[in-house]
Image 1 (cartoon, rainbow, N blue to C red):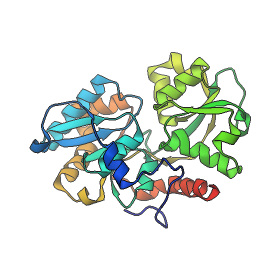
Image 2 (cartoon, one colour):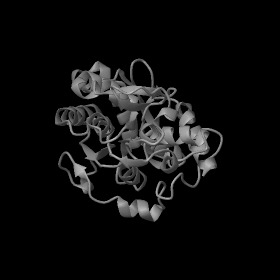
Image 3 (spheres, rainbow, N blue to C red):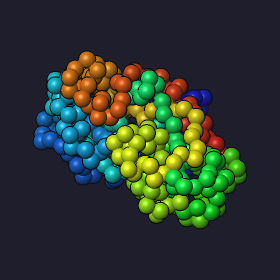
Image 4 (tube, one colour):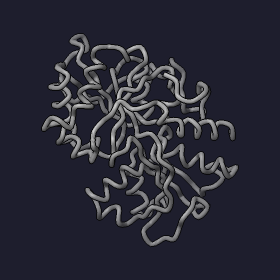
Length: 298
């Protein structure tokens, strides 16, 4: 699959895009929510660290819905970091996964788009810069010298967008901020800013907006200082070699048909999503341009 004009090669950070050997080495143990041996060929669906990965009600409902809708046993595989889930997808240990737009762009020749979530009528979302509720800030320039919380080094909204903002200003996080750290979860970024562990943070706007409904006591301690433009929502992806398989076709149909079935509607309600669509790879061109910007800056 091709997104944008040219293939993205190399990496933003030395650690970001590991070698194939490193990917295979990193694709080891997983947290699996259901039985089934590998020899039995269950469908393995991975999830990255979104804000509801610990919600057992959601996970059970999603697993149940996909198993019934696809007509095959489905395993949900949870990993702590984006790199772990992407490595398992690329190495064939997962059949499909809900990943971030950043790794989707970086591995666009190795990955193929299955479906894109629809949130508030759009297949897109924004990145937010958060500060404490009592602070005045309207731009990243107001955050200079902060202790800043990022979500994940492979996150678009929780890292790449902020890096691109700084690259536009000929700066890097280590030069602009007093200190930075990764929380490995968007909800954790909100918590860090709310608790004063960080003075500001980079977070998925969808996550923050949903948390305002589910945990308003948390988000009211923070506020949005800046919003990015709209970008392609974190997609469901599969390996390019698996894209034409019958199983992926079943998964795509199950996702698109989710609003028509009671359990599917329950899953969407828990996720605060409208549904899923086939999507267009061009949705991720804005992310690709940010990768190129940061890479060109060095």
